[in-house]
Amino acid sequence: MKTILIAAVVGLVVSILLTPQLIKVFSRQGFGQEIREDGPATHLSKRGTPTMGGAAILVAMWIGYLVAVAVQAMSGGGGPTISAWLVLYLTTGLGAVGFLDDFIKISKRRNLGLNKKMKFIGQTLIAVSFAVGCLFFRDAHGQTPGAAFLSYTRDVPWLPLGAVGFVIVTILLIAAWSNAVNFTDGLDGLAAGSSVMVLGTYVVIAFVQFRNSCFAGLPDATMAGCYSVRDPLDLAVVTAAALGGCVGFLWWNAHPARIIMGDTGSLALGGLIAGLSVLTRTELLLVVIAGLFVVEMLSVVIQIAVFRTKHIRVFRMAPFHHHFELSGWKETTVMVRFWLLAAMSAALGLGLFYADWLSATGG
Picture 1 (cartoon, rainbow, N blue to C red):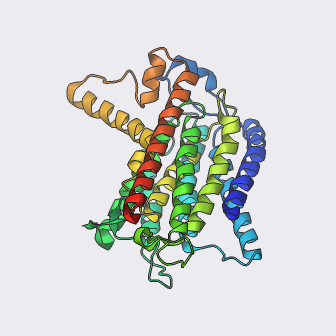
Picture 2: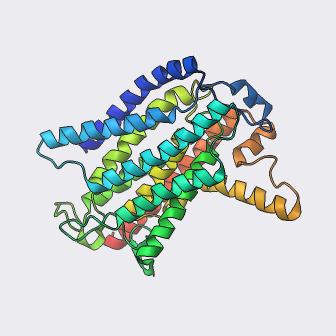
């Protein structure tokens, strides 16, 4: 528990101190956000706000994790694990794709960065290497970071994927969640605040899995409801570091935002969430935990599908949060109410996880 707290605190401190320095540097370099011309008129004033702020979250995550692991090692604990390296790789890799996308937007002075093909290739290469890595690196108990099953809170035996199926599903999950968070990043603080809710839930889930591991031999482990997850404590530490980074960044990103996370942050956070669901065996449960991101992505899909078939618009504008802005809601009103929806989704997901644990243990 101490290691998790250290990671969160260090991530918070690094992010809250680093972000204003990035604001100064990016402002001096003219790294300002371009705004959609067809978006809400109130957003035009945001043109020129420094972007690529997601870099602060990534740096905070890395430093928070490494400091926590170093302290743990000095106390006689273990060092970094392959599960942590994999999720750090996935998050950073997608952050790099997002950074390139943001940089093209800035240099070309337009709202479009990488074209869809190039972004897809970048996301796919990172996702494939992550998925393949999840099937290797067995520990002493024969556990690999990932499992060739779809999972709810544990592997579902009647939903086998096989190695190839696992790689394909993982690619789809990473693409879906990274784009879902990217769609949500349209209001000051919305994506960062919503990510805090999801990451906080995963800190709890990973810690519970650590305390009830099937293999760790811990005093509190309950074999009837144990979890076959490799390196759950290290996953909790990484997640806590990222959580601290998001909270520190949110200090500067809340309305009125002094910096925007950009695709650098949104793609990275989406990849982190997807990676955590794969490594904690909760891919299906994530649909509930991150329900707000699901709604935002579905609003875009519905808008496009209906417009192409019926030539009408279901919403005034997609993603969904812009519909309410164009309906007359203030940006802060939309943000707070969407935060509440994100919190309720995360709480429901955590409740379902706990209910399943009680059921498995006969509680």
